[in-house]
Every structure is written in C-alpha cells, then in structure tokens.
Amino acid sequence: MSKKIRLLIIDDSALIRQMLTKIFNSSDDIEVVGSAVDPLVAREKIKKLNPDVLTLDVEMPRMDGLTFLRNLMRLRPMPVVMISTLTEKGAAVTLEALELGAVDFVAKPKVDVSNSLNEYAEDIIAKVRMAAKARVRSSDVAMGVKKAAPSAQIKHSASSVIQAAPAKQHFKTTDRIIALGSSTGGTEAVKDVVAGLPMTTPAIVISQHLPAAFSASFAKHVNEVTEMSVCIAQNGQQILPGNIYIAPGDQHLLVIRDGARYICQLNDGPPVNRHKPSVEVMFRSVAQNVGSNAIGVMLTGMGADGAKAMKEMKDAGSVNIVQDEASSVVWGMPGEAFKLGAADHVMPLDKIATQILALAR
Image (cartoon, rainbow, N blue to C red):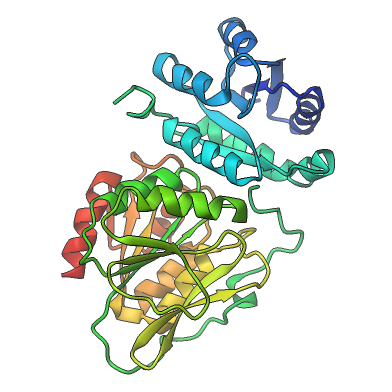
C-alpha cells in the first residue's frame, strides 16, 4: 500500500480544524498528523511531525498566514494549500500567498461554513492530493527579490453551453486572438507570460479557474505587470489588440463573431468539467469563430479542462502552445492537451511570451 500523505492543519478556528480533520480522515490516502492554532505552534509541529502538506488559514493571531508562508518558503519550501475567505480582502491576500509559493487555495464562505466546506469535501481532498505531488518553488518574492468552483453533481460537457461544430466561414479578418487557459499555479503563470508582452500584442482572452470574488483582484494583479490593458470581460464587449479580457469568476467566456469583429459573450450555463469559467467552453468558441487566426496557450492546471477543445482549435487551424511539465506546478491540463495531440509547441514558461510574439508576427 502506498504511503499516506501526512497533513498538518493550521487554523485558529476549532470548528474549521475539526471539520477539515473529518473531511481528510474520510479519504484513504491522507492522514492528519496534527493541527496548530497559530504559526508559532505550527513551526514546532512541522519540525516534530514532518508533514508532506500544510493547510494554512490566512488570518490568524500572533502571526498572520502570509508572514508565516513567506518565512516557510524561504527556509523550508513545502506544499501549502491556503484556506481563505470569499471576500475581496481574502482574494487579495490569497493571490499574494500564491505569489509567495502556495500551491492552491480553498475558499470558505463567510456564512454557514460547516455546510459549505462539506459541499467542497471532494474538491478539498483533490487539492491536497495534488499539492503533495506539485512542484514547489520558493518564489523570488518569498526570497525577498493564488471559493474553488463547487463540484457539480452532474458532470456537464462543453456541449451544455456550446455545441461541437466545424469552424465557421466568416468575413475575412487578419486580427489574431490569443486564447489562454490555466488553473492551479495559473495566477502566477499568467503574470509571467503577459509581463513580456507589448501593447502591440493581439488581444488575449483568458479563462483561469477562480471564484467570482477573486476576479477583480486577479485582473488588478495581471494589469500591474503588463503594458497591455487588462479588464474583466463584459458581455458584448469588442475584442481589440493590446487588451486582455479575463473571464469573470462565475461565467463562461466565449469569443463570437459580428461580421469581421470579435466580441466577448458571457454565458451563465452550468459548470463544465466542474468549472465556471471553463477553458473547454472558451477554446471551443475560439475553434469555431477564430479558427486559423487563433493562438492557443495552455498553462499549468489540475485536471483536463480545455484539452479536448484545444485539439478542436488545432483541427480548425490554430497554432497551440502548451507549458512543459518541468515548469508547471501541475501538468494536468497541459499534459492532457499534449497527450491528445493538441500541442504544436511544448515549452517552459519563460519562453512562452517570445513564442507568442513570433507566432503573432
């Protein structure tokens, strides 16, 4: 039998500690080896218990979660899943934690925490399993130089939002569109890619798996690092070069055509592959409406969301880039796209911006 994942829970709420322990103990491959009410207690328990993964509350007494994480990533980098609140403040802090090197996060609502956490039990367990295998790096920030979508009970495919169809014939246009999908590790990976892109870059549409409360903070974080102009996509908004359009955290983003113009269309359909926004939905719309004018980019992420539709994009004439395994936090989505033959280029994160610009020319 394979070795169980040793987990340490750090949270000042006795209720949350108790609930998380119960959730993890229901799985057969995770063992809660201990819990801590604050980072100072946690520090001693990490030395004594040698856990594989930590869950870490953002707001705690004596030392806040970010300060603790910064020290941890500098001195003893290890997989951390943040437990954050579904608020704008919680979003800003969580994105900073992902910047410091946390692998992923679980968002807890402000009300009815016990029922809400139980609803996400499957998701929470999956995130800890994935964190145990993730590539953890102490970030430059740490050295001083990111509410997950509910698990849908019914699994919907992209066809519940947009039917599969061959690429359509449209008015001729030379405008390129870059369609980018990402999940776990993606909030930082997206920033790394767009940081190297000038204002003259073709428009970029992004579906990153994040809750709605995190959308504004994520757009702000991305906007700070790039010459391009970043916004949360609005329904009916024209897609123009030099701009980045991020799918809002509770809607699917599709790219449609109006004559020779590209338009953002938001869709409130069911979660696809348990995600909303879903990369699968956005990529399929790009395959049908942009075709050979598209450049597809798949960055780090858990699962397979977007992989099949990325192959549809390739079949429709787009050129696709997939992040390589070595530079991905989790080679789930990019790995699946690669296995399906959807990738034209497989490359490390730090080379993707240059490749995008070469293809756009």
